[in-house]
Image (tube, rainbow, N blue to C red; front, side):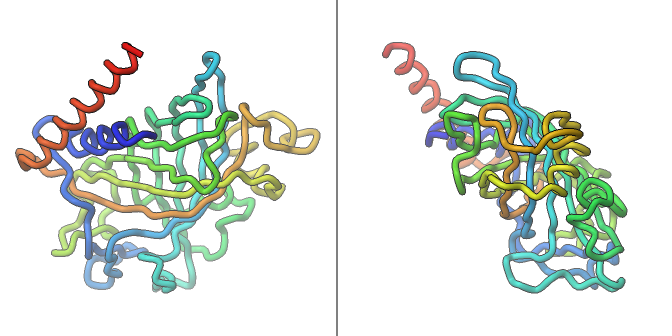
Length: 288
């Protein structure tokens, strides 16, 4: 994704609804993995750490274009890369997430999302992520949050449509009041974020899995994504460039509040500069 597109995307996210804007990424918020409230939660400097895998299916729509559908599973065990797993008052447990998303892209160019859903879960039974329970163990327990994927985000792909090795993939999503369970997410002052509108920013690296384990294929590709090709019933699974493949990665999950206020002049200026830059780039492209 070139600089102008990144700038335009960032500005669009900041002003994606009329009369509302996203505050800066939240710092010093509180996450309680047991749902036990603000006082017993863990203070998060900036982000939750996520790691997981995705199965991506492509559909060629032109000489150089495609649409895609992605199914992914994630494990969330700590925050701020601090090496301190979330304390659980119950015996063990997991915080996990699933992603179902779709979008479009250009072979040898970039791709972006047009919609989808992120769901977060609290599972009081330990060590079930990565098993045959549920979808790779990622959708077990109680759902504690849901975010709707917004238009934008994405990353760069190679000529076969696979994410550039170790390249960054971004997902922008939104949770309206009531889409988060009470008792889990709080701002720095103790306000339960289940009552507010939030943006979520997920940034992960991406690397194609050349030899995915059979359990991952069975659980993620066959069961969750509904894939029916080799590896799902007969024959051995293998990635097929330009058609389907499995990727792995890790990254960060951040939050930002959506405020029903007039945006700062600087934000409006950024949005205007971005649009002007994109317009100029398009005019140059047409005249070339």
